[in-house]
Length: 235
Ligand SMILES: [Ca+2]
Ligand SMILES: [Ca+2]
Image (tube, rainbow, N blue to C red; front, side, top):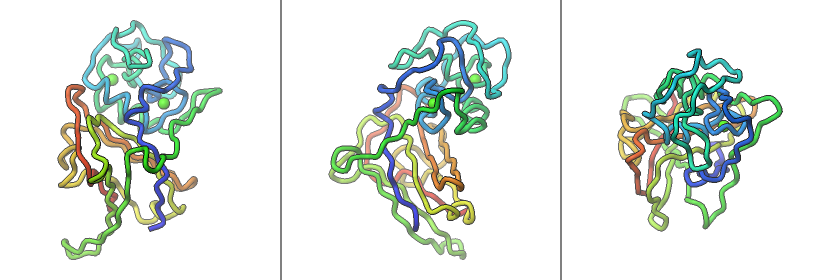
């Protein structure tokens, strides 16, 4: 298929990120405040999803430094306040912060920064990921699907809240074919309607890389399982 996986799951690495910027200044979309907006920020957004706090003076998510008026009093495991998840500054963490913050500012980099979040997975140590291509004739047209499988019979995933990964592919293949990621009928993370999760898929045909990230949106929930979770579908 020309698509090669070289990613690492970040669901456990959320505890390890470095906080690099000045406290009290939010760059909308860079929820973990490590200097770059990418799929890892969705993991933090999901953790704070539904939280509320003091809004910023202006409600917008333009890519510039924004001042936090007051800390929300809840913090991520690395000590960063939940106010960083409020990308648009309206005082609540919800889908608008994904759409207007992370997606609108995707791959923006804070001046003087740009720390990467992804590392190659280690076979036999990290949770196994697999891409499995298939074709579907059910609707009368030939449809290419690539299933994303997380975990297997020998490595069940336990207490998952979210994951983010980066894919590399032969430049041109996704742009020309116009793919998108969707939850599958048999996904063990959420049903296809996605009512309990938030999903991000962004591809950059120039660099031949794509990112997919999914998080639950209820901090009281977790998922355990193994098998197919998403499918890359030609649309
Ligand atoms: Ca970030
Ligand atoms: Ca918000």
